[in-house]
Length: 396
Image 1: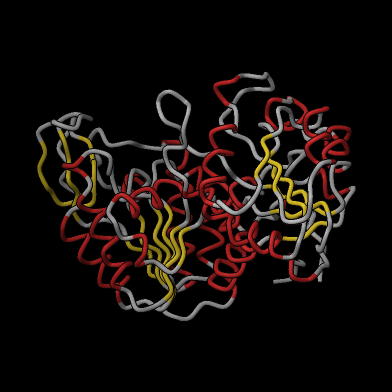
Image 2: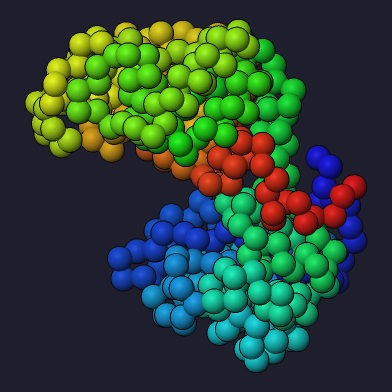
C-alpha cells in the first residue's frame, strides 16, 4: 500500500487520535449494542496501539443527530461494549467531543488506556468539514490514525480535516480494505468476474465503466437489469426502470462488446403481480414479462448460468443483490449467487451494503475472502475515485 500505516511510525507513549466506525445498531431501548461487528473490526488496530503503550483516543459518529446533542445517539453503550471486549484495558467515556470532559480525560490517561470521545456528529462542524473544528480535534493528540473505511469517502473534519494538523496514517482495517480491493482491481487473477445488482443504473455508471476496463465478465442482476433489457428492446412489464439511463445502458453494452467483456443479463425472471412479499409470482423468460407484472428476482436458469461463471473465476467482486432478497419468495437468486461465491476457489470480495448484509444473513460470511465494511466507500473505490479520507494520509 502506498500510504503509511501504524507500523511505519513510532506510537509509543503518544496520544493517538483514531477515527473508528462505531456506528453500530443499538437495542430498542438504546442502552446496549445490538451488533458489535464494527467494534470488533477495529480491535486489531486498537490492540496494536495499546500493546505499544499509546494513549488511544477514539472518535466516531453514531446515527445522524444532525449537529445537535441528543442522548439517543450517545456512544455510551459502545464504550460499555468496548470495555467488555477489552476487559484488561481502562476505557473512559468522555462526556463531550472536544470540550472540558474530553480534555480532562485525555490529560489523565496513561499509556495503554482508551478514551472514547462522545459522538462527533453532535457538532455540525464535523460534517461541514470545518477546519477550526478539525484543529480542535487534532489538538487532542499527537498522531492521527484513519481506520473507519465506511467514512473515508466523506471529507469530514474527523475523516480528512485533522490530517492537515497531524501526521496521518492508516490502521489495519483501512490497510486491508485498500490492499485486498486494490489488488483485485489493479492486478486481478483471471478470469475476473464482477457482479452488480441494485436498482438504478445511474448510481453505478462510473462503477460499470471502470469495471469494463478491468473485468472479463460482468454479470448484471437486480432492478438495474431491467433498464438494460429495455435498452435491448425487450418488454419489462411493470418492472423498475431507470428511464433516463436506457440510452446509457445501450452504450455500456456496446462498450462491453467492443472490449470483449462478457456482459451477462438475466435470461429468466421471477415476476410478481405486485410489489409485495405475499404477491402471486411465477418464473418467465426475460422477454415474456406480462404487462402489469414486475421483476422481483433473477430466475433459476439465470442463477445457474451466473453461478457457473462465478465458480470458475479466480477473482470475484460483488456489489448489489440480485432481487428483493428481504422477501423470502424473491431471495433465491441472491442466495444462489452467494453460494457460488462461497464455492469459488478464487478471491471473493463482497462490496459492502446490501450484498454484505445478504451474505451475513445467509451465514456465508466466513466463506468469503473479504467483506467490505463500507458501502458507499467501497462503491466509490470501485468507481476508481480518490477517497478524501485516504488521499490525506501520509505517503510512504
